Amino acid sequence: MGTEAAARAIKPALVKARALCKRYVQRAPFSRKKFVIDALTDLDLEIAPGCLTALVGESGSGKSTLASCLGMLEKPDRGEIWFEGSKISLANSRELTALRPKIQMVFQDSAGALNPRFSAAQIIEEPLEIQGRESGPRLRARACELMEEVGLSPDAANRFPLEFSGGQRQRLAIARAIALKPIFLILDESLSGLDLATQAQILNLLLDLQTSHSLTYLLISHDLSLVGQVADFVAVMHQGKIVERGSRQQVFSAPQHAHTKDLLASVGVVEAAFRTAQAGGGQ
Amino acid sequence: MLRVRGLTASYDTGDRQSAPALRGVSFDVAPGEIVGILGESGSGKSTLALAILGLLPANCSVEGAIVFQDEDLVHIDASRWREIRGAKISMIFQEPGLSLSPVMRVGDQIAEIIRAHRPGNGKTRKLECEAILRGVRLSEVDRIYRAYPHQLSGGELHRVAIAQALACRPDLVIADESTRSLDVTVQTEVLNLLREINRKRGSALVFITHNPALLAGFADRVMVMYGGGIVEQGPTAQVFSRPLHPYTKGLLQLIPRSRNGTNITSEGRLPVIPGSLATLSPSTRGCLFEPRCSARTAVCQNESPSEVTLERGRRVSCFNYGN
Image (cartoon, one colour):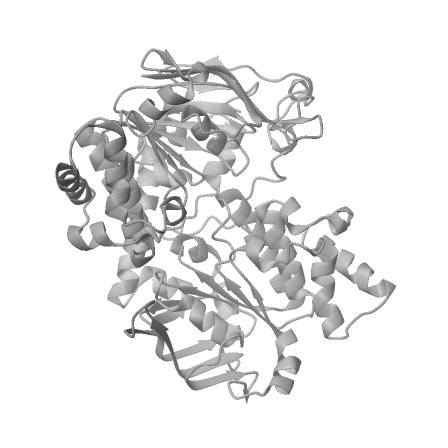
């Protein structure tokens, strides 16, 4: 994967963030005291087309805020976001409607991200309808195609989200995200609620879709050992900034920033214990 | 100390059907031991934990024996349960943020448990709580004691939940997927803390997880659950170095190798256990893992394997174990 990824990286970045800042101000209940949270502080990031870029960091480091800004769900206070060579951080709502199909998101909590009163098919149909891509009988047929594509049986088209297992629900969320043939998919902790066996299955599905739809991924995760297996590039986030960015090999074998080293060390402890148990426990 | 024999549990789903969740589970926990329970979601791990604490909902019928310190827990009444829960057996739940009351200071929530089980006045209880909070490595005890759950970080909440579980020095603590939502760094810290407390106080710990890597170097013994039954159990190091059940082998294969190369297959994909957990129904014949098993033979379809006991406490339920 290494050389291939390197070749793709020569192309100009698909997504570029320049000096992004986002601040949240919260007021404590029954008091005039204000809490200021600087979620993003002068953040720079480039995402290469056709690659899987993993964004890792501790909880509270600003990963999800960055996802919301790139997914155009939040407006950054300052800074610029460029997508396919045009600046989108100042887009008005008409321009946004045209842009949204190209950038889609898959969230962590699939139970909360899918409307519980919509059937599986309705969930996938909704974006197709809003964007006027399909109508009439073609609409349902397309929804069923998409369900099959993500490994769900079209027989389940009339079931409601809560009747699916967690892994199946995440597949459904992925089907909705790819319905509009996006270019860029933001996966915000999409795998973290799932167990190890299901994580591997969903990750494989995402890799298959990446090939068949030529997608660019931003995979946000706090689990370094998971992303360490599949990412082309790894960006490490800490206190609202990207503190390190490089290919998977670079970041894993020669981490530069102290925070990356800490993250890797804690992954290393768990993995090393397992390998020791596996190798030495036989006597 | 804890002996579970032939435990079955099934949920009544209302439409004259029942969904079995546990099928004849038998195991022991010795005093001071750390036992890891490993399994996918839907394997019956949480039902087992709730059964040991007598917290299953009314639509769940339990059969079999759960013997704790020579007392059968399946047939005791609610008032006896109140004496046992929290004092002798306690639990750390999946989401400490949700299991703590949002409208009570966390210190008061710990004191509440001590008050329920032991005599004493408010002042001594407060001192005791502070000692317990220090025992779970929380600094700024005063701030934590007075804080409401939403004012604490995930790691702090977790320690509070552990403190709460340990408040009455129970003999058995059950932790259900309790480190799932934590960062790796915090996760390692919490595991170290649990192990340290276990060594210092000698309370046994049943640790439920879906991630085998967490159990290595942590649990003394491991039990692998699939479809409501224990398919393999034995000392952790031996099970991990020489897994016997095909399901255990599949699970161990899933562990990421981020540092020393990867375990990506030649097609650039991750190893998986094909298929998904079958829905349990009372009429299922044969081995439940058969449809997903790579070592299946003709017999697996019709008969369900019984448990074979091997050397050094290893037990496995498979016709073709080791193949």
